[in-house]
Image 1 (cartoon, rainbow, N blue to C red):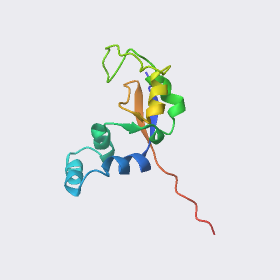
Image 2: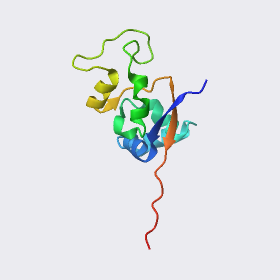
Image 3: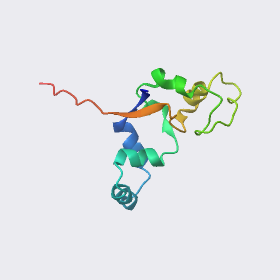
Length: 115
């Protein structure tokens, strides 16, 4: 079964997730054997919605009140919101990546040199 993809902007997310880490933390990340991207995904607590290139296409994966942090425990949508994606858009962050999505990194296109 093919999963939908969440496209994370590499050039925004990676520098953002590591800005709080010192060089020793970075060395530990690189020595872990994981790619820097996998390590970043493993330690993030919040993922800014604006770091998701295809939010409009995939936000329906967040629109269920029957899951939270990968559990099946029912947690109600916060008052004042029609859906979880509305809540996340207002907050500006998502706190997980649903297991219905596969991560794809979107890299910044190289700018063409103007002559």
